[in-house]
Length: 375
Image 1 (tube, rainbow, N blue to C red):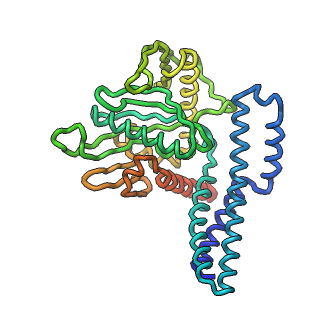
Image 2 (spheres, helix red, strand yellow):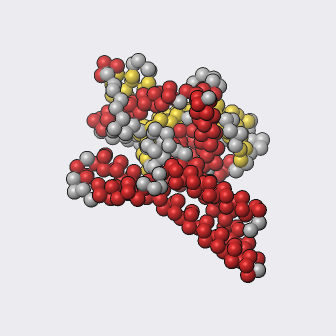
Image 3 (cartoon, one colour):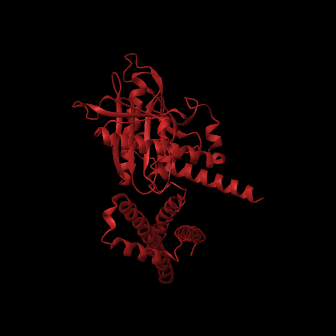
């Protein structure tokens, strides 16, 4: 076996070791049996939220086991094919198996990164907010483009996307939008997207066809599980109801049911305008608790986030990524230097490369911090 191929095999084996370690492969079959026993409990769905969480946790374990065993089996099969091809002098068989190994190496690396999503809330569903910056129509249009990008990304992941609230721009686009994105590791993947996103392009709204720079902010925070207690003092919140237009394109309905909750000590404001007043209050309270929980997570991970937060205030100095459509095409993340010229693909939701690069950076930063702590 060629040295290059041996290195690929070694890299895949390292990924397998990490996957086994992260899910505690030795105890996984026993834990799956426990999940299966609980799923058969006739009283399971008496508590729908707890039942759904149980089903998600069970499926996550099933997926982890199947992924590990599939990669391990494919690795064995490809290595055996290479050895057989070399023994029989069949270069075509060897070449095909080596190509398959390279593809498997990429898959194993992706699954290894996904396995590193082991933060306290990484596996949770997530809220995602988008707000247009200064700049009127240009920024509102950019905010709408970002909303479309994240919805496309979530749909490709098989996640459920629910629009919580939306405020339309005066002429085009949106001033703001809030989504709930549900699926395994939704928060873990999307948390790296918080910050200011900058767009440079020839404006379709400028008759002089001049180049414009627009900004929009994206903020991501996890949906708080029922088993995470966040106490909110009723005296600390103000609840307002108002008329608001819901999502619906040209067919927009107005409703008196919209709810806005302001957390007075922190100044956090959350809204919901898609359902009944009672449902909107529940949704807004969950969003508020999630925002407060996110603040706690940020405090716990201050050493990781310090470099990001030090870039500037919560305004437009806190840029994380630039999307340049003119005079050349390039999307570049300012934290990791990961970049691509496939701007169309990115705006259509091809964000995994950027998220993976940031995740790897944060993991290495965390490892360094832990190592320094041990010293």
